[in-house]
Amino acid sequence: MEAIDVLLDQWRENGLSKDQVAEKFSNCTLYVTCEPCIMCAAALSMLGIKQVYYGCANDKFGGCGSILSLHLEDHSRRGFKCQGGIIASEAVSLLRAFYEQENPNAPRPHRPPSQLV
Image 1 (cartoon, rainbow, N blue to C red):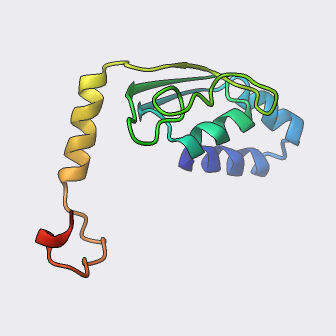
Image 2 (cartoon, helix red, strand yellow):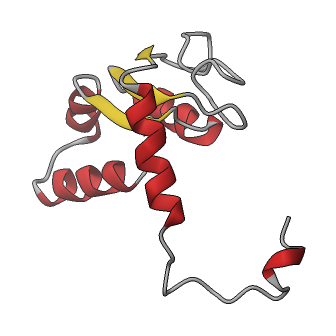
């Protein structure tokens, strides 16, 4: 979603029309670590993105085959090509390393860590 916002801002600054923006998205390929969630997959479909490649599956919220298959074309969406499992073990390692880092800006939990399950 962050990448989409950056592109939209740049294209607006350059004065692109809605049709030109749609054409640009139809030529975009997205590479991500984890399968897009249901919300992101729906947004990518509505934007008309060309294709998505991802590393590991999102077994809880995946929108490209794990839970729902929002990348497949139907009457309400444009659909996009999607391929997962690209260097999946490396993707899982990257995500684990990221989540093991402590975020100094994160709010303090209201409960002791032993009760956060």
